[in-house]
Length: 393
Image (cartoon, rainbow, N blue to C red; front, side, top):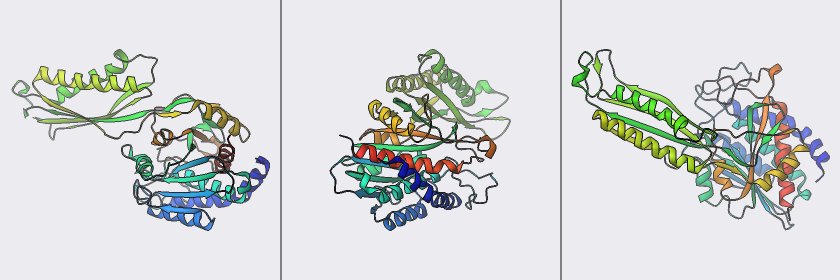
């Protein structure tokens, strides 16, 4: 691999990568609705001479394939495309034109970087062997079914030997790559607890079964799972993020609903936590005569687990491009985890924090912004990984 040539080539297309990113940023689209983004991707790939399939598992999913005449491995590179329901609060000249929708997690940069990698690889196809597959995935932010599973079911990962994903991350300084071997990101178990009581007058609680009182007891007991039922050295968190009940100050309502999330990096820990939660809710409701229902989201994203050997080699490749750090596990979640269940691979963070530019806000913030100088590094990283691993013996 001639990395110096790739460096020169990526500088030549840097402005184009940034232009694509800004176009997508101005026109964000929510999960399952990435129609214009998907069209931009498909048109760009076709113009590069890359074979394109659209509607792969979902209407907005796009798969590009770059084949070479030389035998080698098949490497998949993935970018997610969806935005978030966030009102943008930046003063960028290319801020979102869609009210209440924003690329607050950097998926616009992911698309631009992967398209940049496609441009690099087409220009340097002689460095490749085998096949490179470009996966442009909808609905990563969905948190349930997501976009990876439908794409996999439609054959997007058939025959893939290695898979790589790259995510902009505000935690790390601009240009720093960060990853780790083994578990990297958590399973996001969303839950909903409904407590059915018996309403009445606020002055006579003894004549009611107060669902708010019961819910508060449940909440306190649930938070005890992490401190008393789970090994404290295990990465694990429970957060109740909404409680809804009641209509007026003197009315005890009939029902209360709580929702939240459980994050874990161990399947054993996860199963114990879900079991404890159901037991706690049922026991407290039984004591107070309330009825209850505990629901967990189906099709949640698995734990994101990087292959150790592939990750070690990937970190060597990335260290020739920029600084590489080993990160701690993150309790966010990613449906890239589903791709890693089908092929060996690695998920990598790319830092974008730059205090001088004001890029200090976390992913998902309404003020999230990106140091665009890192986009060329992401495109270069995708291309270098594809070249290295298609030539892997």
